[in-house]
Image (cartoon, rainbow, N blue to C red; front, side, top):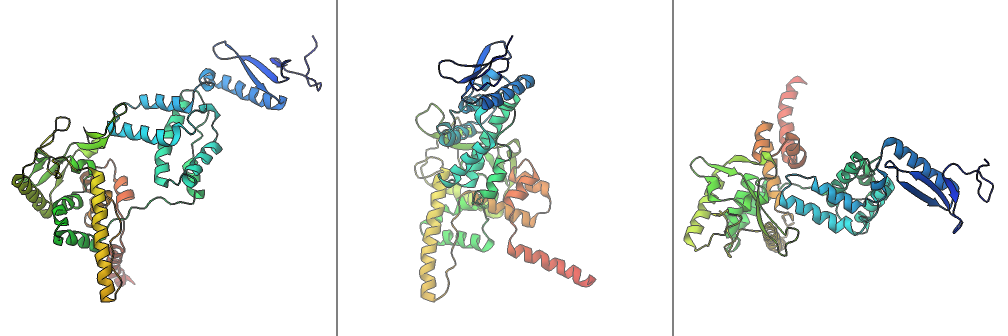
Length: 411
């Protein structure tokens, strides 16, 4: 039997033929379930490249049905269903990040169609055109990478196209990760001193003493109840956290109670003298005013309430920090101009820097890494040392001075 040929006289392989209706080349094959499938191309060589890929897929046992139908959106939604025990706030954050940056941009594409270069172009577009920070892109990557990895494990694709993408982006993205620098002791002293002496901002003094003196996460702080405070033993029990968000399907945002961020987050924090004093001041304020304690998921008796008898929102605390810093800097610039000197300004910082500053100061005075990790509520020492422990120039000089005393005797 004579082999079939195309209009250029090239021999066609088994399963290949030319469609009479439009002249396209076609390849017919049976998938892993015995179902008849077809692929098309205008060019015979391109068609045969697709054939070779299909043959490899069949040999590797890849699910060709899912490969030809599963979109990135469908795969991500399936991945989220496997996240057992995920906190409501975390789940909401994952969906928000994915819906905001991915779902309506590349989410409708078949997951099998993505190449490494596609991911690179998408990441660089987010950085350069959408002008997002590298830390935000990190969050997007932390959703896409496990989604594609699940597709690899489910035999839908052979390789994860996001592998190595973030490392490559860091080289050519033209942005650096946001560095979180702790306040120096002078900056902290200036900030707290300004609050203490200000006729309006002084009401915030107990709040910032607790934030800078305990290293509590924002949600752990706003969720503190008097049942968590043991004034006699001088300890703070961290056993829950508050998060403000809107659940999927709900119309409004509200506070929700959750376990701490990690199992290690459940811990006891000893009180500093100043922290104990701050709690005493907060107690006096609650007793001296008529506050109606809110009830959040059955939890009540909160330590810090605002003027509306509700717990503080972390976003409100962030705005208050900016307000205090702006007022101080404006006054300092006027004083410096009058005194003909350079102003000593406070940096613009966020609520999380309170925790960052506490951790940095703790590392400077404590050599027991297990103690540091326990107080901070981290899973590992690496988290504390890599993220929260900033070496300061003053501390570096102090350490080198101690080393000099020892080494000078040798040299």
